Image 1 (tube, rainbow, N blue to C red):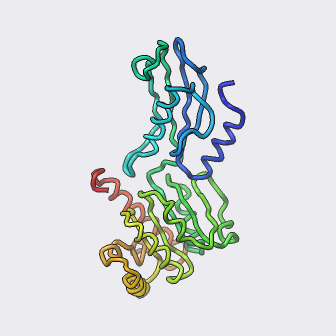
Image 2 (image 1 turned 45 degrees about the vertical axis):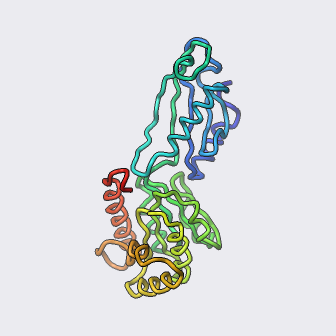
Length: 271
C-alpha cells in the first residue's frame, strides 16, 4: 500500500499544529522507479516525518526540495508544485525512469499573526481574523478564556504562564499583537521581542498614549533602543469606531491589513 498506515491522521495533526510542513505525493512513475504512484511522505524543516516516495537519492532530493519550499521569504507565495525528474539526468541514478512529484506546503500562509492575551477585545480580534487567509497563534495563561473560541485549522492556542518564552518560536514574518491584562504583562513580551533584534512587520500593544510613555520609559531602562521602540504601534488600530470590543477589533484588523499590504509591496531585499 503506497500510503502508510496513519498517514491521514498525521497529516491532520500536523495541519492543526500550525507548524509548516510539506506533503509530497508520487503522482506518476514511468519506467524503472523505486516506488509506486500514490506513495506519499510528510517533510518538515527537520526532515522526513512519515512515509516514503522511493528512498535513496530520489527521496533525499525530494526532501531537500520540500525543505527549500519551507524557507520561502515572507513575501513569497508557495503554491503547490508538480515537478518531473528524469532519474538519470536529474537525480543521478542509473535506472532510466521518470517520476512526477506533487509538493503541497501547509501552514505557510505569509500572514502569520501572534496574539498575546485572551480578553474581550482579543477574542473579538480572533473572530475578525477567522474568515481571513491567515494563521493565528493565540497565547494566554488562562485556559478558560482561550476555550471561548473553538479550535480551527488556522488557530493554534498556547496556554502558558510565561508567554514571553514563546517569542523565540515566532517566524520572522509574524505580525505581533500584545493584548494582555496590562502593561506589566505586556512589557516582558515586548522586551523579549525587541531583544530578538528581528524586524517583525508589525508589533503592536493595546493601550493609550500614556501607556506608551510608561512602556517607553521601562523599555529604555531595560536597554532597548529608542530606534526599536519607535517601531512599536501603540495605540493600535485605525482611528475609527467606538470603544465597543467588536469595533476596536475591526479597527485593529484593518490596520493589520493596511500594514500587511504595504509590507507585501516592498521588494524582497527590503523586508
